[in-house]
Image (cartoon, rainbow, N blue to C red):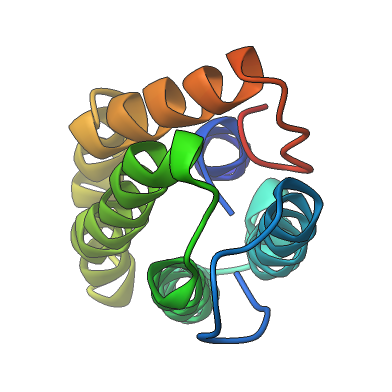
Length: 151
């Protein structure tokens, strides 16, 4: 299950405040850091072999909630103009990844190891992860410090 954590850390981030005016670069970096920390904490149990598929399903449900919360938080933010499109792409990627994790969570809940392996293989080719990675790479090129986002 370390793969799931690695996939998420490579392209994503959850938590932070809402709304307000356009964020400064440093305020946006702080928000990304808070969001990525919340997701890392949610996915930490997935970095170790679960004791059961039921435990995996439960951990994945929490991780999905954190991904959606991070996406909602970043969607409420008004990022600096130069990363506005990247932020939108990252938000979309986080939401899609949360949805893509459903097949893995469902397979684990059914206690079906073959379906779990198939779902993991499908996640390796996740378009959501590719898009999120592209967005965070672009932010880094623009000089942003992303905390846990972007690997």
